[in-house]
Image 1 (cartoon, rainbow, N blue to C red):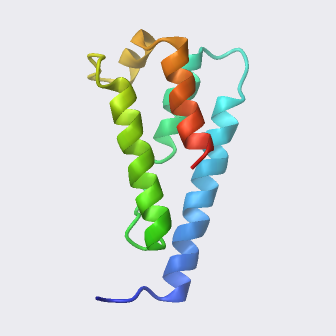
Image 2 (image 1 turned 45 degrees about the vertical axis):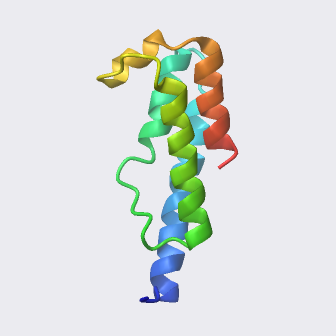
Image 3 (image 1 turned 180 degrees about the vertical axis):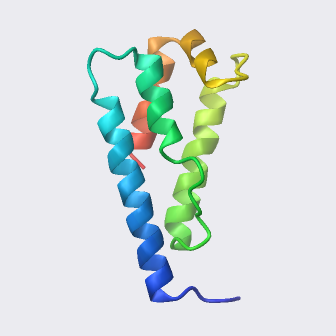
Length: 101
């Protein structure tokens, strides 16, 4: 098992933190439809490399997005715009999962 250098881990944590703060900012934007705020917040994590993160954090991230997949499982989602189909309750669930991450 290889160990990750402290600087790589710290850089990965900073990247995650920056992305999460950006996502939280997306959720707070009034005047934008909830589905758009939610997708913008989710997109903040696109391309996040979790391999350099501490194992517990990377597991929490994977678990969060697995739960998001469960929320969206009953919808036919092929593109970001399809999130308009989600109920406000389901969009709130997704936002809450990311906020609690």
